[in-house]
Image (cartoon, rainbow, N blue to C red; front, top):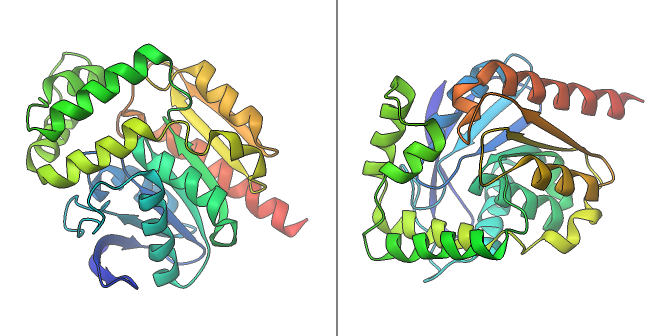
Length: 266
């Protein structure tokens, strides 16, 4: 696996991890994380695909967006520039905030997306959930967003190697990039909600049974809106299921990719 920097059409730098050969799968992580969060998926998918995991804008070693207060469509436009730089349409999979970007890309730029997978997405939050996430966005914007709350929601209260790794990423993420992405995440759950029916490519929507913010009902409702939508709910895990349950997530992603290849050959 190699790490390299791409220059997009606007001159901004994006750091990617690149492994494998074949059709391209683009992986987009969640707020506060980095491309390495996808390491279990990179290893599994690279057997049949070229897998590219990118640091989101203002995360890891990627430049921030130039927009002062970016919204979700600004991140979607960034993803479109990234795919254009790769020079080929992609299968795109995103986790959490990355899933909202992947969804927007499938809606806005179907010419760039062969299939999409949304892992632990949020979709039309309740008023109470929206108020809570907006309050956290405000805390993060002024440097008061602690990491203990998210870590407990994502992993529970027990210390683990994965929890420690993610804590390190959250402590090191540039504050401005973290705050900008979280604000877009907090306000982005309904941006593309009314256009999901326009997604004609295969759409996998996956969540974990223990994810309080991306629950099973939300996942099933989102998948039902797409002509080729499929919902998967993984028991025994929380929001960080790509890391804590990689075998289960990888099996779902490999099935999603294989089904798409069968459709293309039919």
